[in-house]
Length: 514
Image 1 (cartoon, rainbow, N blue to C red):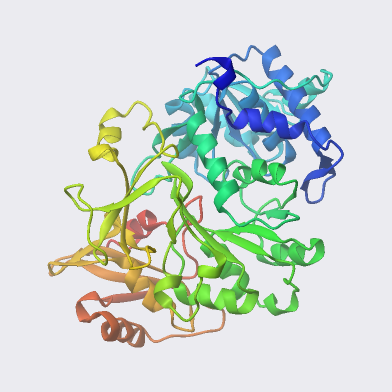
Image 2 (image 1 turned 90 degrees about the horizontal axis):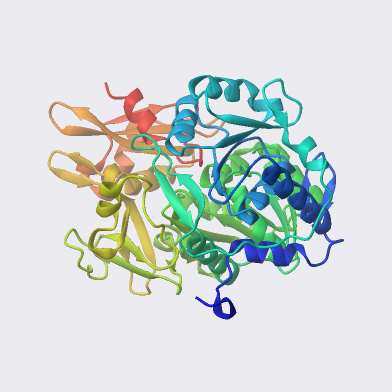
């Protein structure tokens, strides 16, 4: 394609936006200094030069393992502008998952947070002797990348010449059904993601965004939209309910992204009602299913400020959206919806033969369009299976209503077969979550000699509350029939979660097999 008509990609947007309003406050890791647009731009330039001085070329795979700190976003910027491949590792994942990512992605350099991840970096280097290490901060293991960067004077940023199929990022699926799977997010995907977020998400006019999720993952996805919207991004080191509530009040935060378990934790905090949250204009939420009963509670206690996005690593951030005004608290079915497809994509509900299902019938959410990944890295068999019939098969089963809203009833892999009947755990979970004493719930199938699988509900109660197992079982039986009612209720202290905040059903199945 000739240079006149060459499309722009995310690095172009980044360079262009960092060149405007240099004095505007942009980024603050709370407890540290507020960085302006110009300071972020200059630090990005210094990081670009530092990486080049170490031999970086286009296509280098740069891994990251860090807590929330400004250098995470600076590095991500520099990697994009240098046309390298970013491989962020979730800070809460275990050693085996980290080792799998390092070896599977063929990481050239691992940049780690010396204060929090030196021990993990040393262990990874011991297993992968050729792994080159760089540190954020002073370290006995590696050179300090921040010190190297300071040796360079800032120079103007120049976006690279890229093709839409150039790899931007190697991401890894949650690994809830086995080892994390590598998938290639390309420049086309990245540009589609940011375009949909800018067009379809409901952003406050004067954006003050609070990030309390890892900057290596969801938190980083909010940086470029915040920059493009002329906003300011404040970042907490991690999610702590009291600290989030206090920060919203003190800094008049008007926008935040939360996963459902975070929303539950805020609502259940004993001091929730002491805080002034009136500044909130938009609460983005997604990453896992939310209980309609708890969503209704959140809207009643915080306000009509909730906007849901649905996507997955293979088609990130926004395949569908449920806008703020579409949250009808008088309609539980609407609160159980993930919204309607965004107009940038083709979205269908298909049966096992890749044929569209009728309105009201369950079908798998399937997607076509520029948001879809190129495929799983070095896994043509899984890629072919996932792209069967020239659609991305999401693995999520949904029903479409007369107004076009989709309601996910479950993952295909989570469906329980009990006594010859198919049971979708999500429907059972939503009923149990309506009980006033229930904070969180996950429903799984465990092997059973008679039933094949027995429906088992794992429940976290709200602090100081009690519930009778028989009452909970009967509640489901009355609504869905006895065959869908749990055979067993287990009360647990806390819910095991995946790194992205979903109930970890793989762990629960292993723990409660017997």
